[in-house]
Image 1: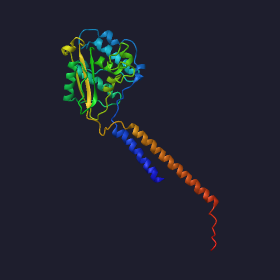
Image 2: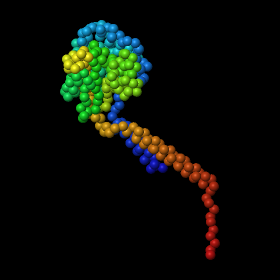
Image 3: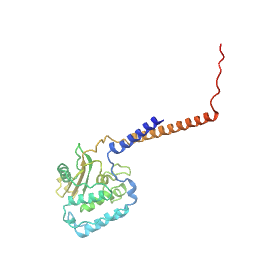
Image 4: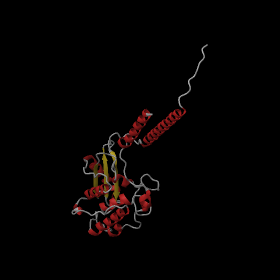
Length: 285
C-alpha cells in the first residue's frame, strides 16, 4: 500500500508541475460576461469629441472619454482612473502605454515597462498601413490596431470594454474580427492588452495621421499596440487535459490502496476473533 500511495503522490506532483511550469500563463480576458455589464447606449465621448482635430486632446473630449472608461471600470468593480499631471502632454503612443499598463496592474498583471526597437518598428509600419502589427516568429504575444478614433483614451476604452459582438454589431463597437457571437476574435483586443504569455514582455506602440494612400480616405488616424516577448519556459502547449487525467488516476490509486488496507484490517480482526485454527492430524501410513 505504501508503494502505491507514494506513486500516487508522485503523479499528483507531476500533474501540478505540468499546470504551473509547462503551460504558459493565460490571459485574463473575459468572454461574454462583459456583454451584460458594460453600460448600453451611445458613449459620451461620441458627443463630446466631434471636433475634426486629430488627436483630440481638448478638456471636453478628454473628460468625456475618461467618464466612459470609468463607467465601464465601475461595472467590473474596478477603481476609477485619475489621469496623472502632464498626461495630456504625452505623445499618443505614450498615453496608450500608460493606459494599457493601468488596465493590467489594476488586474494584478505586471506592467510592461520596456519597449523593443523591433516591436516599435513593427508598430510604426503597421500604423502607417492601418493594420495589426506582425508578431515576430520567435516571440509570443499579440497586437491591436484601431483607426478613426479621437484619442488614446477612447482607443483603450473601445479595446477593453466595447470589443464584443453586442457592441460591434449594435453600432457601438468596432471589432472587425467579431462578426458573430461565437467568433474567436470577440474581445480579442482586450486579450492582447491583458497579454501574459511571456515572462519578459516588451511593447511597441505607434500613432500616426500619415497613412498610406490606400488608407488615407478611410481612416483619419491610426493606433497600434504590440505586446510580445520570448515564450515562457517549458511552454510546450496545453497540458491541462493530461494533468487532469493524471490527477484522476492518482486519486483512484489512493482510494484503491485505502480500500485494500481496510479490507486487510478487517480480515485480521476477524481472524483474531476466531482464534488460531485447530491443529490438523495426519495418520501415519
